[in-house]
Amino acid sequence: METSQIRVVIAEDHTVFRQCLCFMLARNQSYTIAGETSSAEELLKFCRSSNPHVVIVDIQLAGGNGLDAAEKLLLENPELPVIVLSSFYEVELVEKAISIGVRGYFPKYATLQEINEAIPRAARGEKVFHKDITDLLLNSYQKRLKGKNNHLLHEDEVCILKMCSEGKSYSEIAEALFIGERTLYRRLNVIFEKLGVSSKVQAVAAAIRKGLV
Image (cartoon, rainbow, N blue to C red):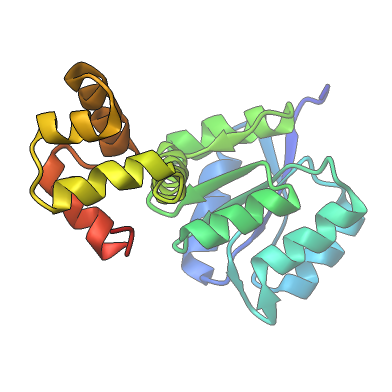
């Protein structure tokens, strides 16, 4: 984007926070505040009339939801860089924001420096997500992946857990399956990883909770 200043529109329903953010950003000669509002409806009007380079929007706005307003903006202009800045950053909200095409997401405790650094990057087309938001998404993904893997136990792995629950020794299990004990240990490690546990006792307990044995 070749321009002397980045035109920013800010939509935030908390008046003091919005005015302070506008004041602080306006001190940076790289930006000009093209509009500020507390209203979802006015946000749409501002963006249609002022042609901003970056839009900063809160989730909670007067007369509407910030994500709904952002979705309408992005349907009209998919390349418009929208950054969510909100006290609300549950996984479901962040994922919805990503699904509609926002360029970034920041919690309100983010520093002014972080916001200042994010705006020009978003204007250049980069994704700009706060580290805590990225960690939140990664942790959520890992939990879901682990939960998914819980249902991927093979029949022979369930059989191993069943024999473990019956108190059979490793040598007895290996003999019953016609495998060596080393092979059994390797299979147990795979089972532990799938169930997110670190011992035979934990694996059996997890299998019982899930109704696998």
